Amino acid sequence: MKKPVLFLAALAFTVNVFAQHDVNMGIIPAPSSIVKANGSFILDKTVVLVSNEVNNAKTADLLNAFIVTKGGFALREAKSVPGGQRAIILTSKGAESLPKEGYTIQISTNQIKVTGSGPGLFYAVQSIMQLMPEKNADKITIQAATINDFPRFKYRGTHLDVARHFFPVSFVKKYIDLLASYKMNNFHWHLTDDQGWRIEIKKYPKLTSIGASRNGTVIGNYPGTGGTDDEVYKGYYTQEDVKEIVAYADTKFINVVPEIEMPGHASAAIAAYPELSCFPDRDTFVSDKTPWSGSRKGKHVQQTWGVFDDVFVPSENTFKFLENVIDEVITLFPSKYIHIGGDECPKEYWKQSPFCQQFIKDNNLKDEHGLQSYFIQRMEKYINGKGRSIIGWDEILEGGLAPNATVMSWRGESGGIAAAQQNHDVIMTPGSAGLYFDHKQSASPDEPLTIGGLASYAKVYAYDPIPKELTADQQKYILGVQANIWSEYIETPAKVEFMLLPRLYSLAEIAWTKPSNKDFKNFSEERVPLHLARLDQTNTNYWVPTAIGQPDKMQQGDNFTIELKTPILGGKIFYTLDNYRPSENATAYVTAIKINVPKGQRKVLKTIVIAPSGKRSVVAETVFDNGAPEVKTK
Image (cartoon, rainbow, N blue to C red; front, side, top):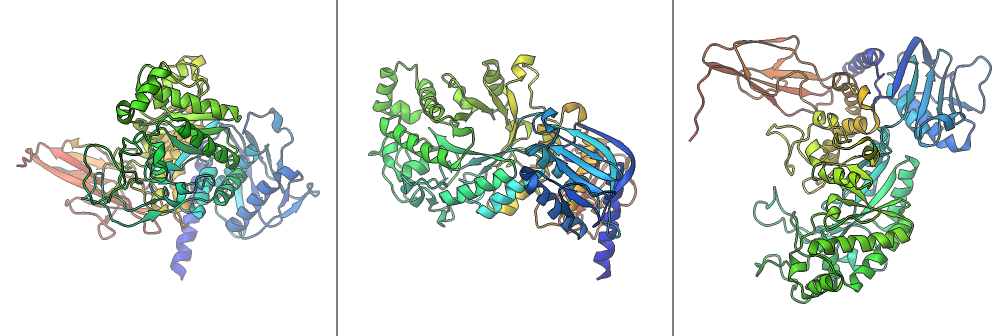
């Protein structure tokens, strides 16, 4: 049993050295300012935790519970500082002068004073937990410093699609924990889509008895390998589940934004209540094994991915249905925002429907885009009447933007730019910037099944959510930034974690930290390796980054020196130059790799990173070419 103990001791030493030298003290996202001072605060079991404000009790308990895990001892709690004793003090006094959600941490040799109110104090404790090095001889030594911090954006969001694949309440809570650890404050919960309706609506029980179940799921990349798995897939959240999750998120200062899709992505609702369709009588349910005649699909919960023609018909019955749904949703979610989707709404059925065409004429609408705008604006008016506001994907700009709508710009930045120029609030979430976390994380063929695209954590980190095209006044309408996890190809909680981490670290920094404080070298070479090393000791899955310093493009020449760094503390790099796949049986990286390439030849460097837990990166490959002839393939 000595080997694991020795390893953990060595890892603790390495972590402590990194933390001492890092200008950001290991904190993600990087704080607004850190000024280090001479000396250290010694945290041991003689330290007193002072918190005499009732509103801070849960945050104080959170910190003490962490110290128990980290140090193996709990702090005695007191209402005031006993004479001469070292103390950690949590207070909201003076927080009124801080920016919203801001905090200060003052670490001296005899006390740590933490000032913040509500979420600010909570975020301060998250920073303290991150900067705290490993225990050494029953004590934790913390660098003296003053930290002043506040967020760049007020909306810092992460999305989770539970319609394509359903995740249990316990995992949704764990997901919220991960977001809160990195100062995210909005959880966008995508609850309905063509492939499943996942929230109980008591007035319409068929939404879950029928709409929450599909008869199979496509196998492999869309359109799949031919058919589906023919296995019933189902699941939904009861209203009690929802209340439990919303209340839990509230303890983490996270607002839960529910999304109820309309007018498209409505197959699950229409399967339950076919009268919501433009063609309730002409489209009848048939077996999935029966070929379809024409272009119309039957009234069933979709088994594959994509965009489907069936949309809500703009009848009074439909609007009453949606209003009743919204009424129940509003009672469950205190969120200011209700997300109504509005994306990828096909117009073909509206074009073919005599009712819809007459509706367009009767309401003096220009075309089907105008009908979509009418639909969104009518629902917005209803939701506004309930004291709430809508968010929609950038397609809600088509045909005219609803008066008070907030736009989520996902098809690049253009929708967000247009909305801000019209003085509408915007949340930037463009897939082109790497903010679709269902995209693969490297170009390696080793990546698991994904929808496609490429969103490395470096690409996410490089994104600035404020478009340069906007004036200073227009920039004020950019509320913040969000990343999305669509679950077509994400079947398990472990894969959600794999797709989220470490990209969540990058998202947190672009959402919280002002651009002048961003430093990708510090982020990727000091703080990410530290956080991944800690994560590696838990039961949370993650994507292991490839070796730092390896070129990602072909190199031309004859002699090269390649210096690498491990992207996770305690991890090891193995490499080959014989074009075979590396493993722990290959050469371990110790010092710079010298590569000589004879004239007319090429060599291939392949590397793999293996974390202390045994988790592995994909294989990274670099070709070094010295005039080798092109390899022609038939």
